[in-house]
Picture 1: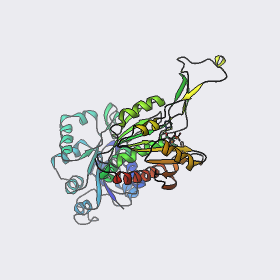
Picture 2: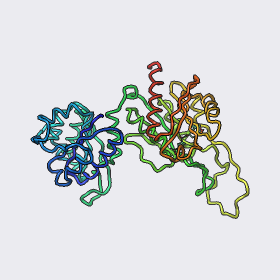
Picture 3: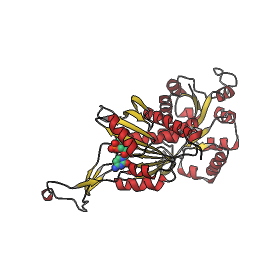
Picture 4: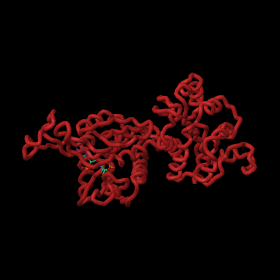
Length: 398
Ligand code: PMT
């Protein structure tokens, strides 16, 4: 099992370290915690012992540790993450001071190092802290920027520890990145579109965006540059993903076409509404003035247009079906000139629309197919990207 070393410093946000550990464990990683002396004033190390099943390291001179533990552990880990990192620890790491286990360990590791700062805004923006951060970045150390909001001191500003999800996603990008995705731009659409009749009524569908956002997360963790064109959903995109928020099919079309030329891989996971009202009224229609029938017309078929314009892009589509899954998906694969089609049977309970799970059938233009039984959308995204990786390897390098 791959292992991560988690350095924990003395910050109020230390309570988020437990969540960080859990998220790593869910992804199949073991975590070894290293606390600074001062951090033990906030939390008893026994908490981390219990969460990780391993003795938390605090001192360089602990008889229960292996001799020269900092060197032995350095050879076992895939990543050193310091979260939360205080101004003091960042300063020590930037200047090579090695006066406790964590700062000494930093000098011994050869794996990637990621720092998630957490402190008061004035301390974070202080030229000295910023200079220390610049120095570490120059040495190849990566950072997860802190967020803005209410700080422990009661003031509002930048300095809050980034969310555990963001910290873990960025960590996984450093561990999981694959060479083939390093120089790739992956354009993904997610969520529904809304086609308005008047300012308060629209045609749409139950897409939650989960499938598209999980695909964006996977592309990000594999090292790609990710552009996410998202319909209205309640989800947080992964860190460093460029997001374009759209509402209607026409807006989605424009956003996708804007980035299409640059993209290497395009995945249309969005549930684009197929119809829109012929008329879009500027004021709310009164109930009694509504006619019995409303005229509708087709929205633009974005994927079909992309298929026609395709040059070097690898084009992936989804097909949400309830009957004749294989036949309909095969037809769309050809019609839209795709390199890979992902058919999902959206009549399966707790699968497809809105669910955290999906069940898919992958189809290739040469007639091959592969079924992936019901699994989390996280797992489904990983399977989809392992097939995309194969397709990318088969392509001539340009
Ligand atoms: O968002 P979730 O809740 O996680 O749900 C995931 C999902 C079920 C929405 C997703 O897995 C999915 O199946 N997305 C595609 C849904 C869809 O629109 O299927 P379709 O068979 O109607 O369209 C085929 C393809 O053409 C799709 O890639 C679609 O994005 C695209 N399309 C469709 C209509 C249109 N006007 N323009 C398009 O580009």
